[in-house]
Length: 323
Image (cartoon, rainbow, N blue to C red; front, side, top):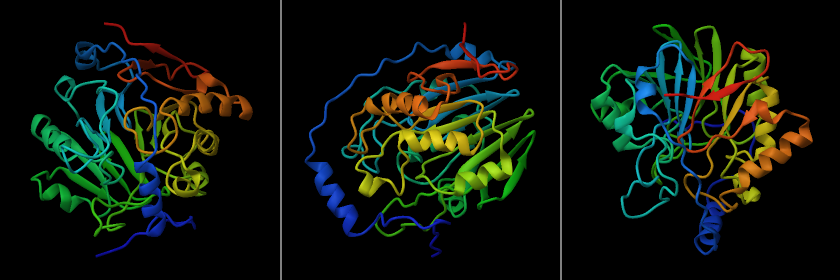
C-alpha cells in the first residue's frame, strides 16, 4: 500500500503526540457558540445560470456557481464528521443549504478522505440525485468511490490536470495527511484543487498547514480570482501547526497566491480543536489589519450565505443574492 508524504518537512503529527492531544482534548471545557444561519434561496440557486455566486454550506463545503456550472467542494451534509452516527464531532451549526435543495451539480471537488471532508452518505446521495456529476479526487481515492458504485470519478496526483468539459482542474500539493482508520494513514493523497473556468481561476485549498507549497502554487497559477482558505482548527499549535493553518497563516497564503478575493472556511461548524469556536474570524480581522490587507479582500460568510461575485470590478466586490 503506497504511503504519501508532504513535500516539505513538518513537525510530527502522529504517534505519541496524537495520544497526548486526544487525552487533553477529551477533558477540555469549552463554551458553546450559536452562529446565525443566513436565509437562503434555493429557488434562485436552481434557476441561476448567469451570475457567478458562492454559497457557504458549512465547514469546507461550498456551492460555487461559475460560467453556468454548479461546483461543490468537500460536501459533508451529515450530523457528525465521524464513521459513527452516535459518536465523533457533531455538527454545531445547521447545514447552510440542505442536500435536497442543491441545484443540479456538475462537478464535485474532494480534497482528501478525512471524515469532515469526505462523508460516505453525502457522496452516495449526490451520485444518486445528480448522476451527471463528475467527482475529482486525489490519487488513491478512486477505488473508494468505485466500491460504492460511483464511477464518474477522475483521480489526480499533485500537479496533474484534467479537462472536464469547459472546466480544467489541477491537483496541487498542500501540507496535510490522510486516513479514515488506524490502518490507512497516508495511503491516499491529499491536495488542494485549482479550478479554471470561464476565464477565472479558483483555489480550493482543502485542509492544510502552512508550507512553501503555497509559494509554489502562486508561482504556477497566480493571480487567483477566488480562493477558499481555511482559518480554523489550529490550537494547540504544538500539535496542529503541521496540518492546520491559523488565521495569520491564512493571510500569508492569500498573499502567496495573489488572491483577489479569499473566503474563509473550516471554522464554526464542527468542534475539532481547542480554540474558541468564534475566535478564528476575530483573529482573521486582526491579522488582515496587521498585514495591511483590506478586509474586503478576505471575507467571512455566515453559514448558508450566498453572495454574487462581481469579478468585473477593479476591487473585490460581492453582493447578496436576490430572489
